[in-house]
Structure formats: C-alpha cells, structure tokens
Length: 212
Image (cartoon, rainbow, N blue to C red; front, side, top):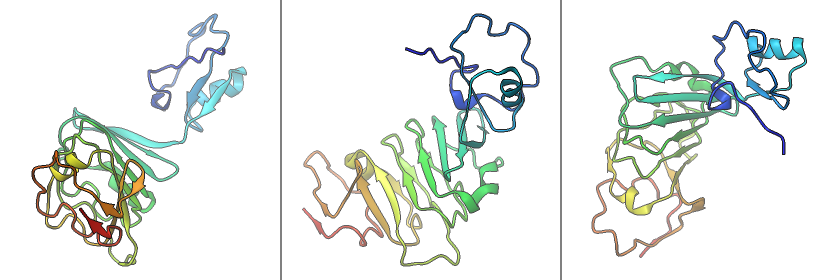
C-alpha cells in the first residue's frame, strides 16, 4: 500500500506558522503526502516542488487553556477535544465564528459544557454530547431564530445522559434526541438507571412520543 507521512501526528494540525521546510527534511520519503491548509507555506512549497499534498478542510483551530483544543471546519463543525472543563474566565475565540457554526462535537474526556461556550450560536443545528460530560449549563441562545425548529442532540449512552446535571436554562427551544444515531421516539429507560435528574428530557417533546 501507499505510505502516508504527516509532518505532525494529526494531518489537520500542520500549522500555518511553518515558514521554512529545509532541504532533505523528508529525504527518501518516496510516498510522502503533505496535509496542509489552503494558501499556507506548506501548500505553496508542495506546489512549487511538485510534492503530493492534500488540503484539509480546517478553517481555524487553537488551544483553550491548557486542557482543551478546538477546531472549526468548513462544513460548519466546531470540535472540542481534551479533558476537564472550559475556563470561562478567558477568551473563547471560536465565538468570532458563530455565524458559520452549525454542528458542535464535544470530545470524550470533557466533563462540563460550560456557560457561554456556545453563546449566540444561532445557526446551531446539532450537538454531540459524550458520556464523559457530567454537567451542562445553558448551551446556546438563538435570537431571532425559528422557535419551531429543533436542535439535534446526539448521545451514545442513555444512562450517562440521565446522570448529567442539567441547567434549567439549558434549552430554550425544542430538541430532538438521538441515541447511537437513531431518533428517540419511544423512550425506554433501562433498569440500570436509578435516577433521572431534573431537566434531563426538557424540551424533547418534539421527538419523544412515549416513555416506558
């Protein structure tokens, strides 16, 4: 097969800050493919030197504190990875792009969806919540949006969802809840769940038709 080489561990992590690639940096890498951002130095280098490359769909990325990374892609997906909680005392630079954020994916390991991290994301269509999340504050505010439209929330563990401490102001409009990719219309609570915390299924009336 074809060997694919990355300048960094993650192909989407090749930084635009790279200003120089020295001679022989990838000597004898006959099957080299460089993953880079459109218009970056690496992209220009590959074009000028006939090096195979692939453009990533990354728009912008960065660090949030020392424990969480974020990346925004050109399909409108905002992805958070890392562990622990968001530091709400520092700048949240992704909020500069709220007009194009359509989907938010919270990575497993993050334990709290903190207040304000998705403020004014009025174009938000879906949110993926991993089992690691233990607490959720108000997620988003969509001024002027269609109140009849629903937000899709994707989960993979119903028990973990029931154990989340939800804010009373978490949702300000209907949501559709999806478990492992399937829309929850007939909610069956398994006998392993001993408690359903307040607001767990608030605003899911648009999708859930029965509970057992």
